Length: 150
Image (cartoon, rainbow, N blue to C red):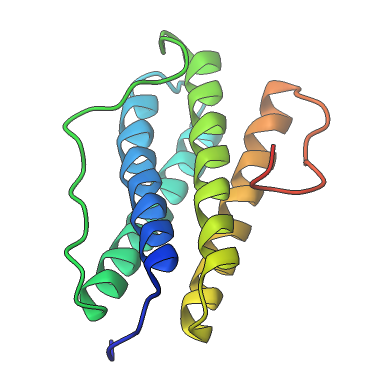
């Protein structure tokens, strides 16, 4: 990846979005232990792969801007304890909402086109997965009017 220039606000936003991707990778690993439905497990594996890809792209982008990317924490706190498939889905929903907010901030605070394209892709992916988890949980509305602002 060629060098990219980041404003101070853009750098902060990408670092925070990367933090949400680190958390998402961890939460998906946790949720895997509690998901019993095979279809949900397949969706979970696909989502985890996508989060790892987004995490790696964000790391690469920061490095190309000459910024050391933040490393993942050893563990993350979920909003509520994860004890079964339902609570695992709620944790997944929460982390997708966090990722949506993180990538929306990048979209709003960044100038380079390829960074905006990455942020839009990541925001769209997270919002789509959040809608999927809401539907499985029976949460209404299943899709917010403004993803990343819920």
